[in-house]
Length: 263
Ligand SMILES: Cc1cc2nc3c(=O)[nH]c(=O)nc-3n(C[C@H](O)[C@H](O)[C@H](O)COP(=O)(O)OP(=O)(O)OC[C@H]3O[C@@H](n4cnc5c(N)ncnc54)[C@H](O)[C@@H]3O)c2cc1C
Image (cartoon, rainbow, N blue to C red; front, top):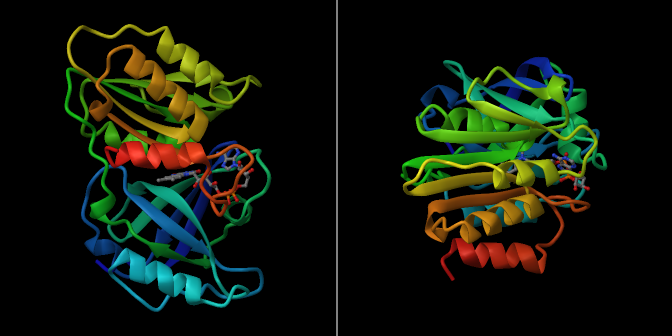
């Protein structure tokens, strides 16, 4: 399958009050291999213009250079998402309609309709993040990590799963998940508290963490303090408070990146 291409919306529905599930079709999707947690970059057209794809394929660095070479007023805005589900030649993406400052992805998703076109880079199996093998696997995150967690559950049968959502109306039909409701509390606080209060069976533990970056950091710190091996913790900050995905990395983001590289 080509790493990059266009996607056309075929259907949009609200699966919860704050989650829009968008079904896309596009050339090559029928050849997409199956693996859980398929991440992709979506490219949203600038206002009043069609989406323009970078003229390069394959190597991600070359593709990114071609992206930057597009004149600024024509350059699509890029955000990261996860394939929630797949059909024969379609993919579903769940957009959290978050209450943060309006960004291009959420603004687009709020009024998405059949026929609209966006670009994609990925999914690419090179970015696969397999869950480390262990006696117990903790999967934890907020609603932005729910698509990844839902698909990871298909390959992990010894998982303890926590997902923090805004309130009870945001729960989805996933029986394994222990739902944590924010109900107006600070983002991430109740998720960290729920994981802290949880015991799991003796034996080797591993974890997969995704969601707001400072929450992911707090969860990781707690797990390391509890004796979970750093190499058994797969973690990614999906978004940052008060910062967009275009903003430069903070010193904490850079430290996370070094940790991931084993530095
Ligand atoms: C690998 C990966 C996979 C992801 N998969 C998904 C997915 O499947 N579904 C999904 O909805 N998101 C997913 N995300 C998160 C998504 O990319 C971010 O939430 C992104 O910032 C949304 O873009 P935006 O244009 O709405 O906001 P931006 O322009 O990036 O940010 C605008 C403002 O909104 C705030 N903000 C961003 N996201 C949130 C949020 N969730 N809650 C509250 N405030 C927020 C920011 O702090 C900023 O102040 C994923 C991220 C990564 C890295």
